[in-house]
Length: 195
Length: 170
Image: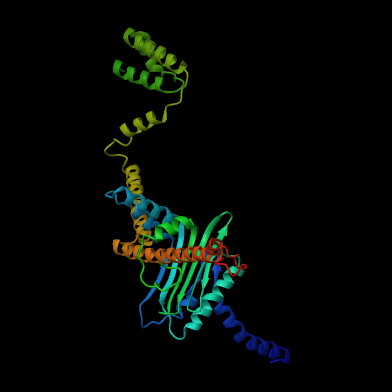
């Protein structure tokens, strides 16, 4: 092997380990989609874990099923129609929900770092609450004048519960809030601002 | 030579296009037989009148109908032609069957839609995610309102100057 080749190979080998962690920590972003696999690695497998990966086909099926039931009263029908509209426009729903293993500081740092990187990548931070014990961030991605991606990052250091949620597709944030409030979700009762 | 022989010869002569000349014995008979002469005269007039008519192409469906009622309808004598058509029909049928079978075997099958159980599972997951997202939105909204109340409204109500702007939720 020539000295030049040896030098190049040595440089590549030396540079590779340095570049790998940097890529692993950066969220993969495409339009309104954000890869949440780095949060998956933090979750304690021995406890309850919810991983959601719903793509366009199943969302379309959900949208269609939301309008199939005709035996509903007016309020339910309105709610079903709102659900149908929401699902029909969504391209994907990805989420990781679970309890963090190891120290809370690592999860808190990853949540805050992800928030900062998305903001630096052009995502708009529509809300952020931070305290020593917890953090909540909601960021949106826009294409033209429409929101085409939303990320909710929630971490409660008290019970070490982590929520990463990413919705890709056309999103009406107001409608999303109204629909989502009808669903009772467990946990996170200690978060600031939650009543 | 009888009258029947002469009339057959007259018919054969008129079948030619143009009408052929009658053989000498026939002509001699026609010259001496008034009935045969009348037949020869009538057939000559009819043939010339028919040949003078304009030639219009036969419509395709008429040709097919004629074909079906003549050539194809013949029970025998055309065994070679019918065998060809039977062979062609059998080959076409075989090709159609093989093509259909290959299509169903190798054609990409559209994936079946989700089952009711999968749909219910997906619905529950989607509701969970939407619920958490809405909770995050509500939490930040409430916190923002609390901050405004604490930093702006309450001091104003108490007559205290508002503190300098600090970190906002946005």
